[in-house]
Image (cartoon, rainbow, N blue to C red; front, side, top):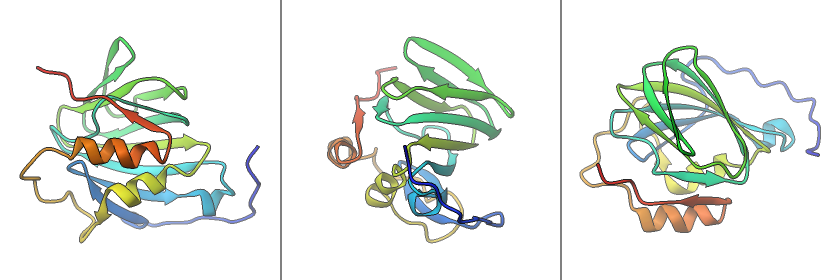
Length: 160
C-alpha cells in the first residue's frame, strides 16, 4: 500500500507540469510526490490523430472525458466516448484512445509514478496549448524503450 500524505494539492486551470508528446498536451495535476505514491492524475488534450499507440501498463487507469469525442479501444472492444464518459482499465489491459476531435480527458493512474514516463518521453510544453503538428509520427522505438522503464508496453499502430 502506498504511503499516505497529508499534502493538499490545489491548482488553477492551466496549472501543473505540462509536456508535449505524441502530438498532445499532457499536464501532471498530482504526482507521486503529491500523493505519497498512491496515484498520478493527468489532464490530457489529444488532437485528432494524436495519442498513444496500443499499450498496456502496470497501473490501473481511470479515464473521464471532459470535452470532445473519442473512440476508446479497450481489449477487443471499441467504446464511443464523449463528455461525461467514464472508463476504468485494469492494469495489464490493452488500450488506445482515438480522438475524433480535439479531446480533453482526465486520467488517474494507480499506483502513482506514471507521470515520469511523460516527463522523459516528452518535452516541457512551451505553452499550455497543443504543440505544433508533428512533422513525423512519434518515434515508436523510443516510446517502447522509455516505456519499458515505467512498466509500459506498446504495439505498433494498426493499419487502417
